[in-house]
Image (cartoon, rainbow, N blue to C red; front, side, top):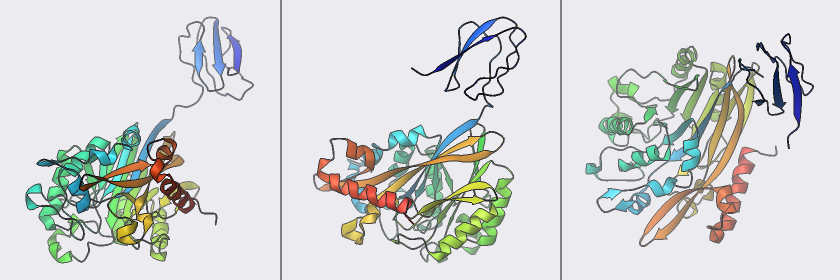
Length: 392
């Protein structure tokens, strides 16, 4: 049983000093009242107190969940086919609860949906079923980052169709745009305003598909542009998040360019930097800048893809991480703490096709459903934790 401190509040008492450290307890009741105060700052009335007793200033809190690259290679598309339609819900069934329990869920959508009638393709120029976006909505995501090297895989029409499909499914996107109004996205949750921006290093040499008068359609990394965007957004929000598609594929360490640009983003006013593109997890850090904690993760790895040891010669491509950022606001918003949920993509045969499912690694290890891949899950967990929390 938790320890309780008993106090009797008299008519003339307006300030109660509690030995366990609670301060600023104001009482404006005009009758004798008995109150129990426990160490969890809960107030349980034994008799009615007319005015609420406030133990601390009310804080607004939200949880932001972010995940890395989502790609749909042809084995995934073929495995999701059911008659004349596609169902990708199996891929997200084990992580859906985590996503939906967050207040704001973000992910990098590294494909385009130019229309099912055009046929489907994987790497190097993706076109995925429109049902992929429906699956992301059903899983609980709110915002998709669409600025990446595959943004122009199906040209201008594919880019526009992707944005329309996202919006028609009740989601929003950042990083690609249908018109010149390319201002950052602002999401207000629980009285906390979050600003969202997204940029990519390039578009796989498909620049000729992006007319010069439509360069606004894809946010390419341009330092002056980014700095101006952050400046403009910071005046309107409590925290600014930048999704950035950068670095070298399959490299576990961020490049010098990533580190240098990451430092600049923080100096320019970014509070949270979410990296993608390498398809493997890279390190993360909390950076104290001018007395405030900022957060950067250079790559969140693959959240969902068909990339594996046997087709990339890199088993790290099977790993990802969901980053949970707990935000708290009193006078200003701060990053209160950060949690990680390592994930691993399980691929298995169903008939003649592959099924893909994202597994929260620790939960899968603690269940009895994945004993046959227990060693692989343990290896994934070890690799992810070592990368995110290096000894040196």
